[in-house]
Image (cartoon, rainbow, N blue to C red; front, side, top):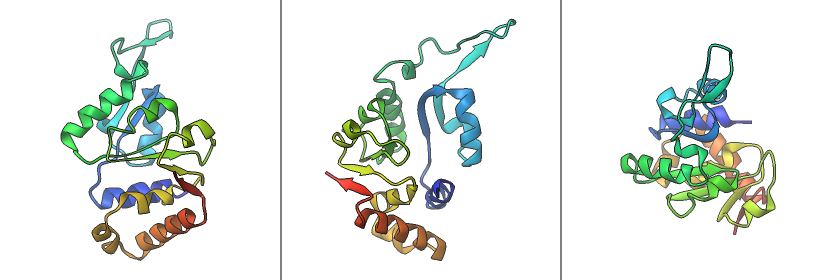
Length: 167
């Protein structure tokens, strides 16, 4: 819930949104389209199909097929964006924790105690609004319209009610 609205709000604040996934690119594209994330902001494993319909990796050297792949992608993104907030739900996401400005673990759909233990912040609610108080500056918060303020307040309430942890 609220994911599209949260992403739209972040985009309105001119924060570029990227998807960095070890999943297959064709499976990620529809999600990106739904969330209005440009295709050039998708980092996922590209595949090809031969004349028989058999799939193969298009990018045999893609960093995303390795455990540290997200770390490599994030390093490239940080050359362009020195302050990066990152939301992830697995061990291959946690590898970027010390690299980014703010790492937020996400367990709103599937709780992982081992991931929570590795995160300074861990979201336990399905709603993505809880990331807003963790990512926005006071100036950005002050510039939000009524709808944005309501999303931010919902996130703040979730944080205050223990639907996330601050280890």
